[in-house]
Image 1 (cartoon, helix red, strand yellow):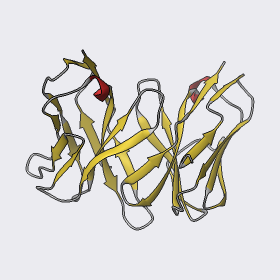
Image 2: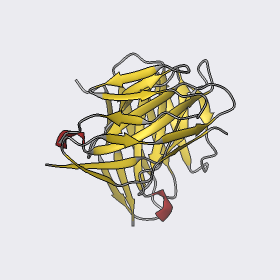
Image 3: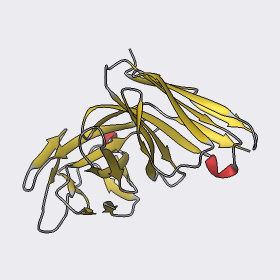
Length: 111
Length: 114
């Protein structure tokens, strides 16, 4: 069983569209994250949730809205997609400080 | 805020060569330090960690020692293999309780040739 799974793996869409990425973890962790990795592999935190509560919102445009229906799921909805949103988005979960378990990523391409 | 600087890649080595990837950090306190590895097409995986000064983290032949005096956490391996080809990220932990996050360096691409 995949520990942290995210769907879809690839997402190609037009500018201005709205899209969602889903993430689920079966590890029983309380904390989940979204990270964005740009084309140069630089990885930057976007959000963290602890037991469905938003903890970290790292000055991300409000076109990005995370939602955590329960502590095993953290979805990311993006409105009005822009070219600069093209990146790989990683979901992660954590049982304690520092040890993150990452999903395999969603490659978003905005045309 | 806290930050991590690691050597620019790419690094290309022959099999069985010695590897060093430099990492230095800037932090107000004494953060925990980590190395993560990303294989092609996959998410990051924790490679090793150290939580206090002079701690040595080790895993799969890789080692790194937390040096407070030089604010460094360099990754080393005595003899690399082709299967070690990946992107390596140094990271530090900021915050505590449920309000913690990892800040990553920019990653170093390692290619090992047979």
